[in-house]
Image (spheres, one colour):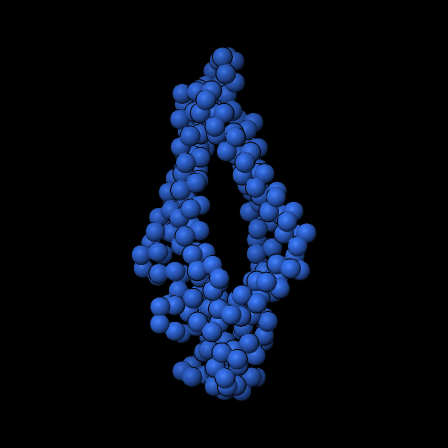
Length: 224
């Protein structure tokens, strides 16, 4: 009876890690697709041009695939070394997340000031040759989040040296609508809008990740 339960737990953990590995494959695939078709998609930072959505997805997908693979093999083979490697990897991820969270809350003001300054610098690359990824990213963000500029729509005035904004800032999109009056543009600042969205959604992702890890740790088959 007990042996049967342990076998059930072992195969359940294998199935769970298999899904984890497949999820990593999916993330990696999306990252490669973005890199191949969209260039440096979502590269908003002028200081860190390699920090793009495509690159982040590729690194994340590869890491998740590696952890999932080790977990699958360790569970099905009941290999102590692989299971230990799997749990150490999870522990390192938790420690890294904890450090990043602590540093973020400790230096929130400095991070906000630096990020906004860097993003404003990146606005000057909008629409320029070789910066298709940055241009597409700003257009998508302003359209989807209904915002304009980093702090407000006047950020674009310095870019164009005129009272105008990209057409993606318009309440109702039309050709050259960015040349119209400010009353026809979104007023919300993109930095605060996106930051608020991330805070709301990352909380849910964090809770899911914690529950996932607890299931993995609790479901590890004891070693003979």
